[in-house]
Figure (cartoon, rainbow, N blue to C red):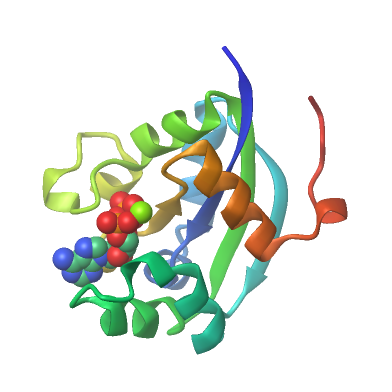
Length: 142
Ligand code: ADP
Ligand code: MG
C-alpha cells in the first residue's frame, strides 16, 4: 500500500451544523491523519477557481454560492491509499445513493450540500493541495 495525501474540505452545511468533530472522527477511525488544516471562508474567486472543471455545469453558480455561504475546513489528509480511501469514506455525491456509515449518508443534506469534498485522483490531490497550501504548511510524516 502506498502512503498518499489527499485534499478534504468540510463544507458549510457541516461546519454550520457543528459536525466538524464528527466528520474528523470518521477520518481518524479509518486511519487517515491530518497533515494540514485551515478554517476559512472562501471568496467567490477562490471557490470558482477550485471548481473550474465544473464551470459549464448547470449547478456551477449554486455550487459557488453554497461553498462561499459559510466556513469551510480545508485539510490535507494522509494515510495508506488516502485518495481512494477518502472517496470511499465520503460516499456517493448524492446522499440518497450513499452507503450506510459514509459521511454523506450520515451528515449530507442534498446533492449540493453534501458535507465534504475529496480529491478524486492523485493528480487532482496534488493540484488541490497546492491550490490551498504552501509546501511548508503541510506536515511530512512519511
Ligand atoms: P464529488 O464531490 O462527489 O466529486 P462532483 O465532482 O461531480 O462530485 O461535483 C462537485 C460538487 O458539485 C458536488 O460535491 C456537489 O456539491 C455539487 N454537485 C454535483 N452535482 C450536483 C447537482 N446535480 N446539483 C447540485 N450540486 C451538485
Ligand atoms: Mg469531484
